[in-house]
Image (cartoon, rainbow, N blue to C red; front, top):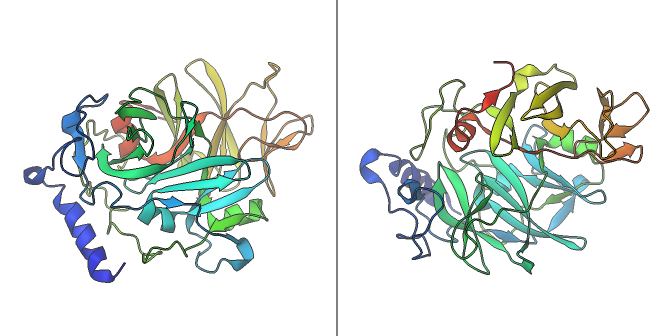
Length: 353
């Protein structure tokens, strides 16, 4: 993509944020559907401008070895995936321009979804209702958040709502899995044999250039209205949100030490453990193992291992055992901007406040 197109894209999106220039809602221009039956308020579904597939998703992009990767700085963010065998880093700088990557990994077909406007990365299975499908970018947004569509049924899926909100599969929940957002330096130190999505995607894009101006850092810059604007934290503060029974609780980097540390907490009747540090990552698990036992956890920093108990068991950021037999059960959780958590899950609890 050449530079003039980049400038036009940003200006076009910003212009959509004015109260006088609200674009047609879902089902309107660029919506790709005439079905007006929505789970979310259709008047709050906005057309972002590019239209369906105007932001092109990727299918099975080339993967590089970490040693071949020269386009990432150590402090750049990636979404990390690990299935117990294969580790892959999906760089923000690529996801900023494509938002969805359909990827074959071993015998599994997965979908990496990332919304650069809400800062949310969520992993999905490509198998929906016992049928394999790929996902694309609809061009629609709700609370500034990505609405994807599946290519089999053309149903629209709200990323942070975690379900289909329009179309034949309306109401079906997303089959999600855990991704870990952290810096490239942290990820490659944890997973030495990681693969990395290549910038050789077949699309001419200025990877490494953020396409939305000062959106990441300017708390006053929102492209579209919010259904709920919670002022308790700065809008663009990145927080780790945990979802249980449709309710949310968020955790802040400032609640952790500079080295790996943990928070033992209770939310909606569940004991959970959140491990992280002040700058690199936050992940969370249910504190009770499948056998009903509750380990005496401590935070460690030993390669992949970030959690340990007093029996010598150790776990990585996905809950896979580094030593010991029993995995941890991950919470349904992901990173995102505070404004997005407050909009989708009104009045979420904030740890420490």
